[in-house]
Length: 260
Length: 99
Image: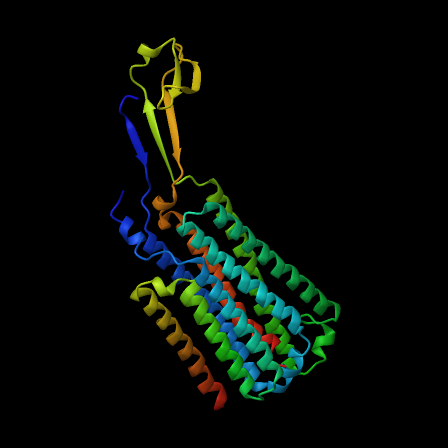
């Protein structure tokens, strides 16, 4: 090589991006906070109706979904911990399980909502409108809040799938050595890579007159002790989002399923 | 490489065991809240359910979301949110309860 080497490293603001995602999560908390406020006011106004309406919901399905989301939070945290320990394979496996848990949650939600629709319980249905006011409000809040939460789970699944692909493809750094000078000297030769014992490990095509330059591109996968947490910054931020979705469900679950 | 490197390794990575323990405590709390809901505490049941939910949320925030390892800025941010939510809910109820 002719001594020209360019190290391609991008500037990353680890703390700044984490702060940014936390600020976003705060807007999420206030979004759901507003809906929880609405819920608590109507609940205090119609305690009996909320009580009866909640009996319609399947506590078992709600409990299973709680367990699924809690487990997905565990695998999410384990995935990030795996990157901290330099174990990319484990990080990928845990990430895949997290997305699958999200899918399981959504499948449960599909059947749960499906059963409600089957019993003619959906916003604006004549069957529901014949019920007391508080029950209509309860189901309105139920569909909106679990619906918005479900959308968040879907978004999280897409986000984590993207992260999976990113971690899968990610070599830690790419450095390109570009040789453009002195090509005349090696014209008519073939380039080869040799190991420490001069044994040829790779041999290229002939460098003829048409070759203007040779790019030697190398990729580096970090070993455990060199792993940088900041390189998995996006994965961590996605994880924070996934956990906040879990936290929202932690509040939705008792308020809708356990007040019978 | 850069002088950020030390900051990035500011805390030792937590072991996997801690996360399993966190998960297990969340499962136990879920079991408690489901059981408590079946025991009919009357008006207290909401208080119990919300208290357990708050404990669970705090555990997720502190351990899964690594607030334990974050600096004061992040901790203050959370307190600001909690304060804001208390004000929103409190002020709204002073209106609806005394109409």
